Image (tube, rainbow, N blue to C red):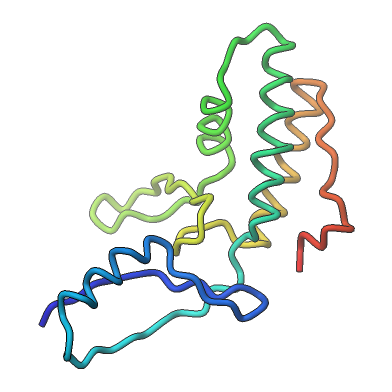
Length: 149
């Protein structure tokens, strides 16, 4: 039995999307007149597109400018990696070595994506770092955009 795995994202409005859907369409065309099974996992706790835009458009931008102003010539990609290395990770136990390892959190809507609760906690830590170390104020998200719904 041939299998293919695809993510199905159902947003807060009930609209479903399939990232990389062409792969799924090609698979269906190649296997006509077959019986298949579709299953999905509800995933309403991951960060929204607005929260993702806030991280890239505000947080990364402000930190990048703060590093530039402090004399460090870094790219925005390096700022993203800095965030992943310092805050955007969870520690998971390795069953083989019995030690904890850093597992980066995804900015996307995958299983290991940031949850809304973790997003808020990490955002607060990043804002605190920005104020204390770079003297940069990262403003709160605009509540008019209903970012946390």
